[in-house]
Image 1 (spheres, helix red, strand yellow):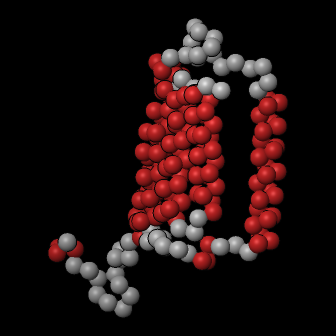
Image 2: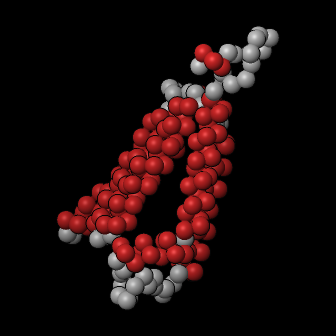
Image 3: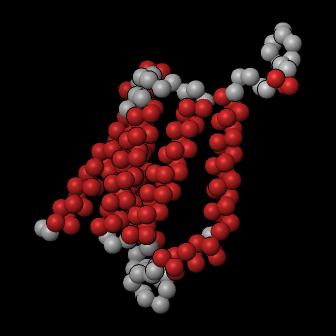
Length: 183
């Protein structure tokens, strides 16, 4: 077993362990931080597979943008930061959720193996791997509309979180309207 294989196995165990902690912790901020650990371990796996561009995109987009957006959303909506017992489900619900998730994971794995058996993804002239330029060209030619729709969706979610968290919008109940000249 080589050093790369050992590191890959270690990062895989870290990713799975952090993913389990994301869904089992009772503190929302800790769940977001465990998500950072999980995504960073996946980025490390990409690095070991010689997919540096994908690892960089993983860190920039998911760790740098999505997790920060999640943390801003938690903080702006005044969600409970500490331990929250009302997020805890009874044991029968946990068991049924685990059974459904394992069944769904099995269906996804079987369908993916069946759908992509023997397929190769060709990004450029080289049939094995493309360059970052080829991936960028494919992204901005074929996938620019879904990319922009996703960015608008994330922006709308952030604006919605800000609006929901503001209690000073509108006149207070039973009181005079706020003076906008003093703002």
